[in-house]
Length: 488
Image (cartoon, rainbow, N blue to C red; front, top):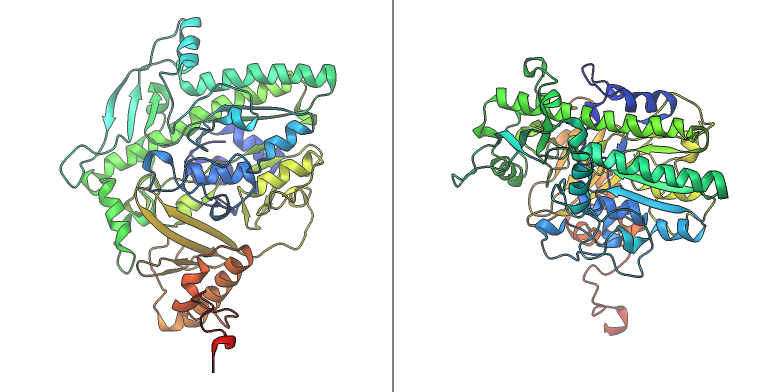
């Protein structure tokens, strides 16, 4: 699992310049999902959804604690998590790398083995990482060539990238892969000797910004070869004001396009660095004789803007750049080289893990097993997908419905958005208010409303009174004061 990873950085997803042979090989031998979405494009809610099999509105861990806007910061102790069921079924469970699914409760509280690596970025001062550097006579973390813009108040912008003065073997990514291989060797021994199965997650902190990589990856791609995304032409006309505000916050317009091209080039280099470490883990699987017995998943928590829509990072803008992510799964014995176009979610991994382990999938209430799709079947499948957002820096509730052609986004504080992804794949033109889109707009609004009611997501209460959502079978005030029993 990676963090803040665009699908278009991988060769398997069409990037002709990408250096991602390990992940491309996984796609060649497994199933690549072209419509794999995050339930929420923010780290903690997405990771909590993977852990629980529940949508964010249900588990209620809605924001990263570093920019918490008043929500809870940890899942309750009675919260369902798939790891407890795996442990009860006799599995070893390990997690190496980024946790970020709570503040006080760590991965160990959910029965995962591994070092406690807290926070949102590479914890380069962690004692286990420092011990790794010392044990291997490797130099400490040091950076130069920092790239950042200028904030609206004149201050220095957020660090976006920097050159790392360490050899590859000293990088945090190499360290994480090394610790994963060590745990894999222990788990493989338990599997061979005692038949004990295992679940092992390798969670990289990158390619989340800032993109801090050593020379060979910082300079791997020539910025002149980088084509800027078409949505760099974004004007924010007819769109929520918050998007322009976020662009200002990330200081996009204070940097020349040459700098933006360099940032994308470094970002691709970061992906290549991670891919090379995934290759080491896959080679260890082969060496340990695990390939024919082990399912392998690859995805991330959400995407990244890298200049698309004149934005960086992620935030209150439900564009494909941050909601559609890579998703690749290989199950031994399943067809190779599949490409599936069904709408699926990171959430669906949870039920898939449970089904592969022969366990009850029903506690993962918002998750659906991907096993039938991976095995080449054609089951009935929902033809659209719902995503949600709750805020980052400040509360900002949004809901999204995406179907084959259109995307509807409901923004209670501002204008709603509707995009025709067939005619406008870069989501530059908001057609929500166009008269000839009324039928599509109303049909999608009714559909989103029905799905939210069915799920129990109370965001629908706002929609009840504000939009044409069809017949409503309850008192929108939820008061009961005007029931027939009280009327003359």
